[in-house]
Image (cartoon, rainbow, N blue to C red; front, side):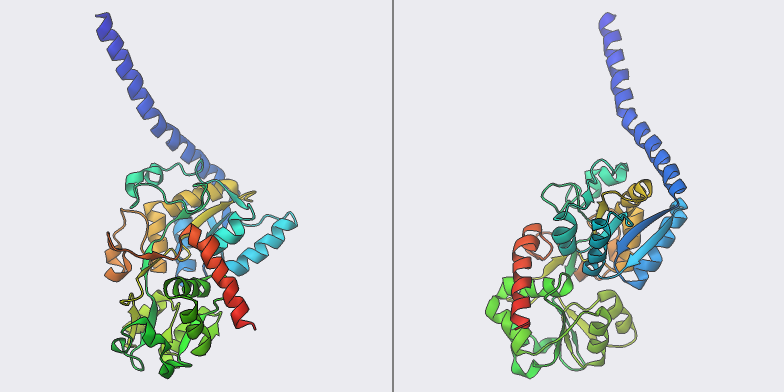
Length: 364
């Protein structure tokens, strides 16, 4: 009898222990939302994409009744402003959705970030089974500051087939054919972001000599305005484009423009990109509770699907139906050996070294 009583008590205790975390997070989450609603808003650095700018604040405010101040722009430029403010002891931003180079080279290196680990409390976020890797994908070596939300099979470049056919570019060597001199457009490879990512991938995969031929001998148009890449590709002025925006090009394709992405070549493997799909929380956040609500929400199925649909990216979550809004080529295939252009070591060592070398080469 005593043994049965002991077993019964042990069972009750285990049940209480199992239920406690659920009760704790629900209570904590409700209290957090209430405190965030008193703060009234959250301020985030985010990409300049109009669709994302419209989708995220509207969805977040509808869900929680909390306003989102959305500061859109190039990550590197927003980071420079943020650094100046923080050096002056002014704290205006709560969280960031940004590219890995800005996250690693500025926010992480300059110790601007707070750990996400104690902040992420929603079970659907902390449950490893909800993520393709079986766990949350932290990018930083400390495994707590920068969470990867996107993992998209990215195009190597786009072609305007009214001028250059896909069949014309059989290998990477065709890109440096003299007939395409002055026909290529790319983001600036000397500043952190899309341009330096593309240059580093080309340099790392095909060597310095090939990169020099693309960025010097071919006399490409180098720009910092993302819209220029799309516009000039569509016009055919520069029919070969590195770093064009897929979501904008999709609209053009629907309007009849024959813009074609090239995802791999026999001598140039397909690549993986997180784009601006990393989230981080700033130290001394001016709206700390709203900031915590935001990072939980953007990592949840609802928040991340809203972000991914607006941005046109594949996610690191396993419970989002990406096939309903993405081309199959954009979703990484299991077992394929992709080149991850957003890997941490590649970003903080090779990519940054190559960016500085490109700066030296192009500014001579």
